[in-house]
Amino acid sequence: EDSPICIGDTTTLEVVGANLTYLWSTGDTTSVITVSPLLTTTYWVQSSSGVVSCTDSVTVIVNNPQTNLVSSITSCDSIVTISADSGYTYLWNTYDTTQNIIVNQNGNYIVTVDDGFCTDIDTVNVNLIQPLIQQSDTAICLGESISLSTNNNSELLWSTGDITNSISVTPTQTTTYWVQSSSGGVSCTDSIDVQVNFCGCTDINAFNYDQTATIDDSSCISFIYGCMDST
Image 1 (cartoon, rainbow, N blue to C red):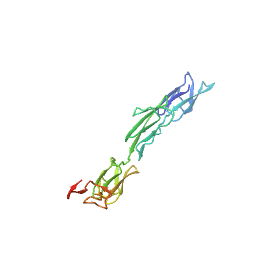
Image 2 (image 1 turned 135 degrees about the horizontal axis):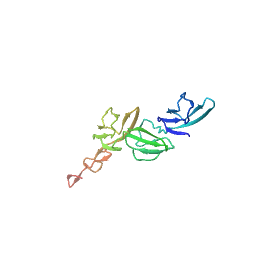
Image 3 (image 1 turned 60 degrees about the vertical axis):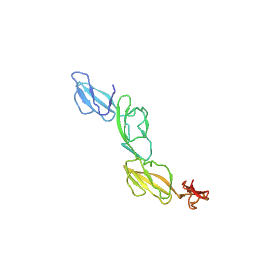
Image 4 (image 1 turned 90 degrees about the vertical axis):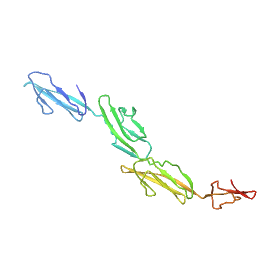
């Protein structure tokens, strides 16, 4: 009868009969042969008593489940979907049992697929290189400095030319700063807007009123009964 095996396995085929000669489709002439086909294969054997010859055959079904995972995924996204081939049961090292899983962390993800007879195991390495600037768009006063940093440890390049995880900037005008992270031939970019305001006293009645100021910095000094008072 037909015999199923997993790819890479061997199986034994045997003819039962006494005082016969044999010829297999493999060229073997023994009553027992061992085969290890890579594809589903039909083997035949001819038995002869010297007077009568008879032929029989058997099909060795080769099961070969395949995950077909890519070896690695490098992405600018914060999450990615990993997909194995359809038609099997699944077990991931995340304990998920679905064909597809969504991941948000770097690392190796391993899946075992089972076709009911044979299994296959494969691994994919995920590298998420999204260079998230940890600060949000912000505003500062002219002359102030601000620190910008990213949580990414890949190869970095800031618009300032810096290559470190954290930089300090003192813009003289509203400026967009970007950082580029590169890994595995993929480059990803994030940016932040730093608005520069002219800060000072905006109270027109104050002693130190600054008509160029757009943001009040609580430094106004007013006159009270002939004296100056900070309000």
